[in-house]
Image (tube, rainbow, N blue to C red; front, top):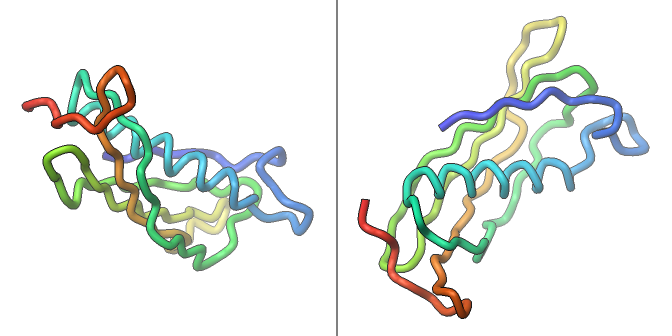
Length: 119
């Protein structure tokens, strides 16, 4: 699954580059959407995010692309890889800027682990 976001001035830190907190928010949100599409009816919570790797800065006006792919499915949890590239505008140069894995756990109405829905 793929998502895109335009980097605007309100996303920038004091150095003029993308604030890492926005990247983490989008990674969690977009991976969650992928999980919900793969497992309709699930009640996911974020269980873990592997060590994150910010490999290059992202600037105002860049378009970042999130490529999200299911990596592992367990009995109660699912893990997605998230790779982010940035397209420099107006240079047209695409570069790798971020990677992590996100794991979600399905829960019941009381917050306990529950089996993943059949798909």
